[in-house]
Length: 306
Image 1 (cartoon, rainbow, N blue to C red):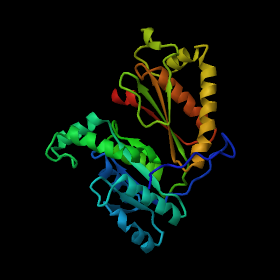
Image 2: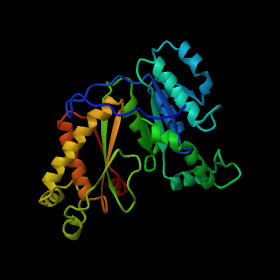
Image 3: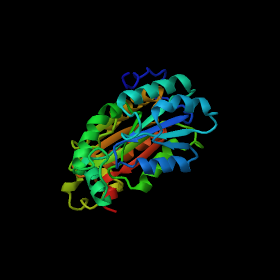
Image 4: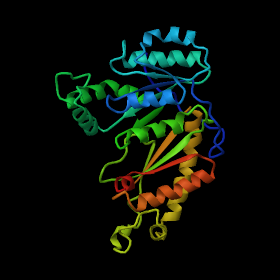
């Protein structure tokens, strides 16, 4: 049985007010070893989920039969889980879709390979898929094993630059059962010098806009400052660019919402991640919020400088 996400549904109304989504009944958390699965499982437990870690997928039928459905469920699954494979996880998801009122959500925790390797070395832990070899070998093996699962995930959460506190906050914002569920739009500004985020649904290159870096009086400021916003906004292409970017994003959002997604990630980059991408992210965020979409805004390069 193949593990695959369903096709995008055609939205009835593009760009309209986002509809509230029910809290998921079952969340399956998996991903790369060292990417934060243990932290995530503890976060779900603190949010009131019934949590089962490394639960054998072959016993899922009995588990669902025994549940009364009054409490949301989070299942932690990894390569060491008994019977784990892309095929078995795909079968589990298909089974849950036929038995639950709300579709299960598959959350994949990812992280840059080099950071995963450093985490294993710093913690003096052996990688589960390379107990007698270097962590890099285990990371490479696991990535090959999980590529198909990552491609089918409802949410891919990149923890490369997240602290455990940041990761818990991200999960609480998306999965707290006490909140009405709406799809959140995550806007992240970044520096192309460090590379684009791997998990964004939409990546936008803002490097064609006027660059305040070349004005020494503006160089130390960032895109949240009015002087930088005025400088970038004075580019004759800026207004048309922002209009079209907003229109395209608002066109895409209802389709992803109809498909059951709870988070839509937009990555906006410029050379240094300090000026142009920040201005565009801030401007786009205001427009999306005005259209009724919840927005989560993060400036990755500015966070590094705090």
